[in-house]
Length: 179
Ligand code: XMP
Ligand code: MG
Image 1: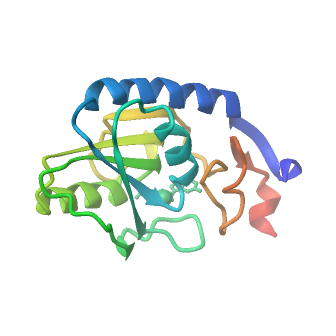
Image 2: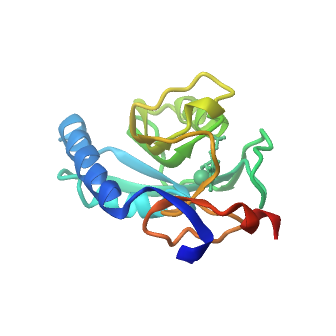
Protein backbone atom coordinates (compact mmCIF):
# COMPACT_ATOMS: atom_id res chain seq x y z
CA UNK A 1 0.00 0.00 0.00
CA UNK A 2 2.89 2.38 0.72
CA UNK A 3 3.56 2.78 -3.03
CA UNK A 4 0.04 4.22 -3.44
CA UNK A 5 0.74 7.04 -0.97
CA UNK A 6 2.24 10.23 -2.35
CA UNK A 7 3.18 11.75 0.97
CA UNK A 8 2.93 10.92 4.67
CA UNK A 9 1.54 13.99 6.43
CA UNK A 10 1.45 12.65 9.99
CA UNK A 11 3.54 9.70 11.15
CA UNK A 12 2.53 6.87 13.42
CA UNK A 13 4.83 8.23 16.14
CA UNK A 14 3.30 11.71 15.94
CA UNK A 15 -0.20 10.25 16.22
CA UNK A 16 0.72 8.16 19.25
CA UNK A 17 2.38 11.12 20.98
CA UNK A 18 -0.73 13.21 20.33
CA UNK A 19 -3.02 10.52 21.77
CA UNK A 20 -0.93 10.56 24.95
CA UNK A 21 -1.19 14.36 25.18
CA UNK A 22 -4.94 14.47 24.49
CA UNK A 23 -5.52 11.56 26.88
CA UNK A 24 -3.85 13.49 29.67
CA UNK A 25 -5.95 16.56 28.91
CA UNK A 26 -9.17 14.50 28.89
CA UNK A 27 -8.19 12.77 32.14
CA UNK A 28 -7.76 16.13 33.88
CA UNK A 29 -10.99 17.55 32.49
CA UNK A 30 -13.23 14.53 33.08
CA UNK A 31 -11.79 12.90 36.21
CA UNK A 32 -14.69 11.72 38.41
CA UNK A 33 -17.33 12.62 35.80
CA UNK A 34 -17.66 9.20 34.10
CA UNK A 35 -18.09 10.70 30.63
CA UNK A 36 -19.77 8.91 27.74
CA UNK A 37 -17.15 8.75 25.00
CA UNK A 38 -18.80 8.36 21.60
CA UNK A 39 -16.80 7.20 18.60
CA UNK A 40 -18.13 8.10 15.18
CA UNK A 41 -17.80 5.01 12.97
CA UNK A 42 -16.02 3.92 11.03
CA UNK A 43 -13.32 6.57 10.80
CA UNK A 44 -12.78 7.22 14.51
CA UNK A 45 -12.13 3.55 15.32
CA UNK A 46 -8.29 3.57 15.45
CA UNK A 47 -8.26 6.94 17.23
CA UNK A 48 -10.81 5.71 19.77
CA UNK A 49 -8.65 2.65 20.46
CA UNK A 50 -5.40 4.55 20.95
CA UNK A 51 -6.78 7.62 22.71
CA UNK A 52 -8.97 5.84 25.26
CA UNK A 53 -5.98 3.78 26.43
CA UNK A 54 -4.42 7.09 27.46
CA UNK A 55 -7.40 8.24 29.54
CA UNK A 56 -6.70 7.45 33.17
CA UNK A 57 -10.19 7.74 34.68
CA UNK A 58 -13.46 5.82 34.27
CA UNK A 59 -15.27 6.31 30.96
CA UNK A 60 -18.11 4.60 29.16
CA UNK A 61 -17.76 3.98 25.42
CA UNK A 62 -20.39 3.82 22.73
CA UNK A 63 -20.48 4.17 18.96
CA UNK A 64 -22.60 5.91 16.43
CA UNK A 65 -22.51 5.50 12.69
CA UNK A 66 -23.64 8.42 10.61
CA UNK A 67 -23.03 9.06 6.97
CA UNK A 68 -22.73 12.29 5.07
CA UNK A 69 -20.49 10.91 2.38
CA UNK A 70 -21.07 8.30 -0.30
CA UNK A 71 -18.25 6.17 -1.63
CA UNK A 72 -16.63 9.27 -3.14
CA UNK A 73 -15.02 12.40 -1.78
CA UNK A 74 -17.66 15.13 -1.84
CA UNK A 75 -19.98 15.85 1.09
CA UNK A 76 -23.62 15.37 0.22
CA UNK A 77 -24.60 17.74 3.04
CA UNK A 78 -27.15 15.38 4.51
CA UNK A 79 -26.55 13.35 7.66
CA UNK A 80 -28.12 9.95 8.10
CA UNK A 81 -28.04 7.83 11.29
CA UNK A 82 -26.85 4.39 10.24
CA UNK A 83 -26.37 3.07 13.79
CA UNK A 84 -27.62 4.87 16.87
CA UNK A 85 -26.22 4.73 20.42
CA UNK A 86 -27.08 1.91 22.82
CA UNK A 87 -26.81 4.36 25.73
CA UNK A 88 -28.96 7.31 26.78
CA UNK A 89 -27.06 10.60 26.80
CA UNK A 90 -29.53 12.27 29.18
CA UNK A 91 -27.64 13.95 32.03
CA UNK A 92 -24.29 12.70 30.73
CA UNK A 93 -21.07 14.50 29.92
CA UNK A 94 -20.63 13.50 26.29
CA UNK A 95 -17.31 13.52 24.49
CA UNK A 96 -17.53 12.90 20.74
CA UNK A 97 -14.48 11.39 19.05
CA UNK A 98 -14.06 12.07 15.32
CA UNK A 99 -11.39 11.30 12.76
CA UNK A 100 -11.70 14.58 10.86
CA UNK A 101 -13.81 17.71 10.77
CA UNK A 102 -14.17 19.01 7.26
CA UNK A 103 -17.42 20.85 6.44
CA UNK A 104 -18.50 20.44 10.07
CA UNK A 105 -21.95 19.24 9.00
CA UNK A 106 -21.69 15.81 10.65
CA UNK A 107 -20.54 17.14 14.00
CA UNK A 108 -22.92 20.09 14.17
CA UNK A 109 -25.76 17.65 13.57
CA UNK A 110 -24.54 15.34 16.36
CA UNK A 111 -23.98 18.17 18.84
CA UNK A 112 -27.54 19.41 18.26
CA UNK A 113 -28.91 15.89 18.56
CA UNK A 114 -27.20 15.22 21.90
CA UNK A 115 -28.35 18.57 23.31
CA UNK A 116 -31.89 17.75 22.18
CA UNK A 117 -31.53 14.40 23.98
CA UNK A 118 -30.64 16.35 27.14
CA UNK A 119 -26.92 15.65 27.51
CA UNK A 120 -25.37 17.59 30.40
CA UNK A 121 -22.46 18.70 28.25
CA UNK A 122 -21.22 17.93 24.73
CA UNK A 123 -17.62 18.34 23.64
CA UNK A 124 -15.70 17.32 20.54
CA UNK A 125 -12.25 15.86 20.17
CA UNK A 126 -11.05 15.32 16.62
CA UNK A 127 -7.77 13.87 15.45
CA UNK A 128 -7.71 16.08 12.36
CA UNK A 129 -9.15 19.48 11.63
CA UNK A 130 -9.51 20.81 8.08
CA UNK A 131 -10.67 24.41 8.78
CA UNK A 132 -10.66 25.41 5.10
CA UNK A 133 -13.47 22.93 4.40
CA UNK A 134 -15.94 24.46 6.86
CA UNK A 135 -19.51 25.13 5.73
CA UNK A 136 -20.90 25.71 9.23
CA UNK A 137 -19.40 27.50 12.20
CA UNK A 138 -17.94 24.71 14.31
CA UNK A 139 -14.78 24.67 16.42
CA UNK A 140 -13.63 21.44 18.08
CA UNK A 141 -12.88 21.60 21.82
CA UNK A 142 -9.72 19.58 21.21
CA UNK A 143 -7.94 18.83 17.93
CA UNK A 144 -4.84 16.77 17.23
CA UNK A 145 -3.56 18.22 13.96
CA UNK A 146 -4.63 20.76 11.38
CA UNK A 147 -4.50 19.43 7.82
CA UNK A 148 -4.57 21.28 4.49
CA UNK A 149 -7.58 21.14 2.18
CA UNK A 150 -6.53 17.86 0.54
CA UNK A 151 -8.14 14.45 0.71
CA UNK A 152 -6.30 12.41 3.32
CA UNK A 153 -6.39 8.70 4.08
CA UNK A 154 -5.15 6.31 6.75
CA UNK A 155 -5.66 5.74 10.47
CA UNK A 156 -9.42 5.30 9.99
CA UNK A 157 -9.85 7.54 6.97
CA UNK A 158 -10.74 5.82 3.73
CA UNK A 159 -10.92 6.23 0.02
CA UNK A 160 -13.72 3.92 -1.21
CA UNK A 161 -13.38 1.92 2.05
CA UNK A 162 -9.65 1.27 1.56
CA UNK A 163 -6.61 2.57 3.49
CA UNK A 164 -8.32 2.77 6.92
CA UNK A 165 -5.74 0.31 8.24
CA UNK A 166 -2.70 2.46 7.47
CA UNK A 167 -0.98 3.45 10.76
CA UNK A 168 -0.29 7.00 9.48
CA UNK A 169 -2.12 9.83 7.68
CA UNK A 170 -1.19 10.40 4.07
CA UNK A 171 -2.21 11.75 0.70
CA UNK A 172 -2.92 9.33 -2.14
CA UNK A 173 -1.18 9.51 -5.49
CA UNK A 174 -3.51 11.21 -8.01
CA UNK A 175 -3.49 8.16 -10.31
CA UNK A 176 -5.31 6.17 -7.61
CA UNK A 177 -8.37 8.44 -7.95
CA UNK A 178 -8.12 8.42 -11.72
CA UNK A 179 -8.02 4.64 -12.11
P1 XMP B 1 -17.86 16.81 7.60
O1 XMP B 1 -17.73 17.43 6.22
O2 XMP B 1 -19.27 16.51 7.94
O3 XMP B 1 -17.10 15.45 7.36
O4 XMP B 1 -17.12 17.60 8.64
C1 XMP B 1 -16.81 14.57 8.30
C2 XMP B 1 -16.58 13.24 7.66
O5 XMP B 1 -16.21 13.35 6.29
C3 XMP B 1 -15.21 12.44 5.94
N1 XMP B 1 -14.04 13.18 5.41
C4 XMP B 1 -12.93 12.61 4.93
N2 XMP B 1 -12.61 11.32 4.80
N3 XMP B 1 -10.52 11.94 3.92
C5 XMP B 1 -11.40 10.98 4.27
O6 XMP B 1 -11.08 9.82 4.15
C6 XMP B 1 -10.76 13.27 4.01
O7 XMP B 1 -9.91 14.10 3.66
C7 XMP B 1 -12.05 13.62 4.55
N4 XMP B 1 -12.64 14.81 4.79
C8 XMP B 1 -13.87 14.49 5.33
C9 XMP B 1 -14.89 11.70 7.20
O8 XMP B 1 -15.56 10.47 7.20
C10 XMP B 1 -15.43 12.55 8.32
O9 XMP B 1 -15.86 11.80 9.43
MG1 MG C 1 -16.21 9.82 9.68
